[in-house]
Image (cartoon, rainbow, N blue to C red; front, side):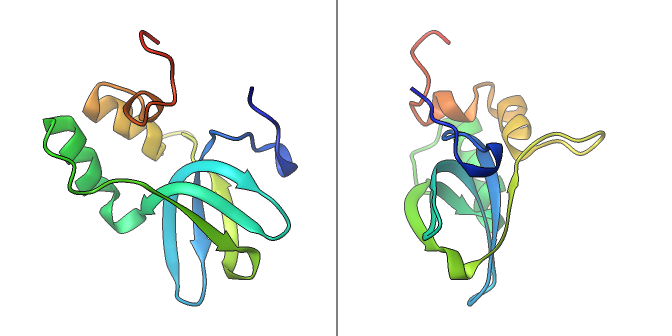
Length: 113
């Protein structure tokens, strides 16, 4: 069962989180969002393309997503990863390049979906 989180973001939504101290951008699947912080199964945005190519080639997993908690005092912005006009979301790019959705690769979707 997927529960709705604050701000209309549901668990399992792909998001980009902008962090400070140190400054980072992280892409991933939202696990939870509370007043104390964000739990994300994600990857640094700088390595997203490498991970996508690894998955597209079916190579041994050298790069992967990790589950991590970011305290709210580090979060500058959290935005839904979505295609807007000509700008393609990371999740849609991944599905196009790999031939499977992020959820299928991470085992978040039932087999055959």
